[in-house]
Image (cartoon, rainbow, N blue to C red; front, top):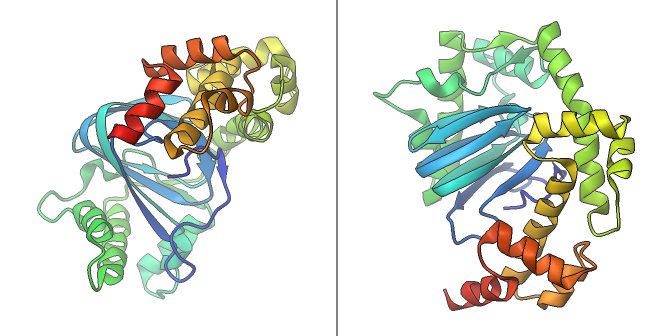
Length: 286
């Protein structure tokens, strides 16, 4: 799962079926979800444990059975704790061919005339849970799963429409998007330059802010200081490379912005609970 790209430009799924499914467990190299954003809808379902989701600067603590809807363009990230979770990422345009009334509703969603909040799926029917159908269809990928997937998505949006679990994309919501725009610029800058020797001033400048204000703003949006998050992101990148076995510990450090190997090992152990070498060995022995 390529959550390590803050602004994911890649296509999800295939050209003719742009829907992707990810099953994430604690042993996965990409277990944690660094902050990112993309132009697709994302639905996260927690199967076990808890998931601390940060959504546009707001905290959501998810537990087993919870499902959250993430509007396209919204920055988000999270920390799972003894958690197994799944994600579905898709382009809403795949549903725009219908000429029925719900089709008009989906077109308005795609144009950002309506906004669906993160907790919109809380009131879904337990008698026939379309989220179960959606995640099961994509997980099993049996013959005809594409039709089951599309059926589940139509059921989801028709249910949201019927319950009026959406809002007009009013001035307040547009202001929220504008408020997060500078954060996205900082994320894009970190993604592009994380392997270089960048400073707090560099990150603040990318967002068009003073260093002092940027620190407060970034921590409110992500829960971490800019420098703390930069190191966090670098370690996550290093984890991916070590798990794939493509680099040595020294190369993982130097290739991800750490010029001091000792500091890299210390930071890695603080974040992951093991040394880089232990992390790499555990991934190959498991």
